[in-house]
Amino acid sequence: MSGSTDEDVKVLHSMGYAQELARRMGGFSNFAISFSIICILAGGITSFPLAMGTGSGFEATIGWVIGGVFALVVAACLGQIGSAYPTAGGLYHWSSILGGRGWGWATAWINLLGLIFVVASVNVGVWLLFRDLVLSGVFHVDVTAWTAVTTDPLPSGMTAEQATAINSSAYTAQVVAVSLITLAQALINHFGIKLTTLLTDFSGYLILVIAVVLTLTFLGWGAGWDFSRLTTFVNNTGDPGGNYVPEARPAFIAFLVGLLYPLYTITGFDASAHTSEETQNARVAVPRGMIHSVFWSLVFGFAMAVSFVLASPDLAQTAKDGGAGWFNLFNNLPAPGLLKDILAIGIVLANFICALAGLTSTSRMIYAFARDGGLPASGIWKGVSPTWRTPVAAIWLGAVLSVAATLYSPAFAALAAGCALFLYVSYAMPIAAGLLAEGKTWTEFGPFRLGIWSKPLGAIAVLGVLVLMYAGIQPPFDILINYAIGLLVLLLVLWFGIEARRFKGPPIGGDIARRASEIAEAEKAVGQST
Image (cartoon, rainbow, N blue to C red; front, side):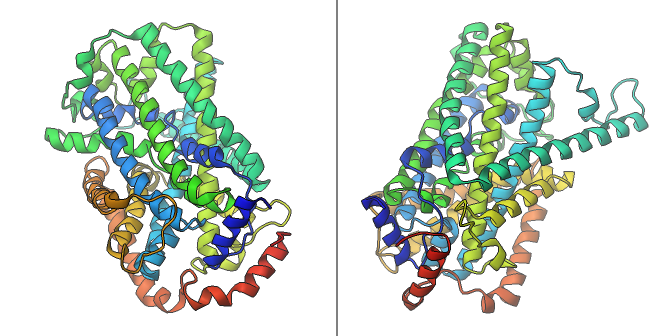
């Protein structure tokens, strides 16, 4: 092993864990996996109607910067903790060490729920983008039978029976397509981090190239260069925004809800932490990967959003188009057909790799939580293939759960919209614990430090997530109140009823020394020399 890898293994051993996964990721790869999950070509496109339906051009551009800077603060705070504790458990492990095993256990479940619905929602997006941009747009296939229709009101001339039949056909097509997409991603993850890394590295370049070309295409063939659009706030809630936000709301509430546009997009950067046990020089690479992935997503996503706003022939009509707003802009753009076809294929491919990286992150979270006995049947989910050096069972569990999450439409629609909310809550939990523990029980730090900015930025991150929680339960996301209350009650019942006595949490103190023989055996089982 190289010197840096020797040091990485030593740090991992000092936290009581074996080097079972293969350290084949460099610094760029660690950045690329988070950058791929953020994927401005996913949320930056599919959530654009939310910005237009709340605060128009101002929300899409200035709102993007405000949300992006906040995400950068969160990434910096997490990076400081990740530099001290570079483990695959990431948020869960940090919360356990800094806030206690109960706090860590709750963080794990909230983070895991968010990760599962990120993979699920992006894969549904892959299917919808493939259907509308590639099958229909590039190959001119009639996708009417695979496209759901509204039933309130019914389309003109359509009976209720016809609408039901079409929606049933669309649902079946979606289930089959998402299952096949997820199967492919699980197989790629199964056969090694090297293959996954190659694709996510490629995706890092792909997202940058497609984002730049897409931005230039919108500017070159559509821009009206009216820059006042970028700084003009128009409250489009209710009917002016195509009822994307179904009720007219005060301007400030509209602005807060619109911040979900950048924050739904710029999330998932904890993947850098979840793959830390597969990253060389992790104490440096992990914080750098998180911060850089957020920063460059902020920069290129802002440029892309500016191009969309400037290229709209009529911002009021784009807002009125609701969920079809961006697609109408793209389809009506008078750019060369071949260029638009290449962009469409590139967007779909980037979204596919986005969910692929999301599944990688989810599986590492499952593996790490199971390694400490946090899941039912943990003995199965913590297994690592000695051939592929991947947590095979955890990968397939993550794949099955992400497909299952799409099957019940009402729950999926709500939780997919709320996945950013769940993830940011899970981000705030170790940061909040660190605020209280820093300088007291938390005295060991990594090479990345925030210094005097640590507590002020931590406080901003926690308060900002509280604001995000308020925005995230406003209509049309208010059904999340019921799910959040249900989740909170379930976690409390499970913890005080069972887990408080059973769950030991990650190893600390003397437990770490006592694990020495277990570590040696685990590494021997996967062929890792120490």
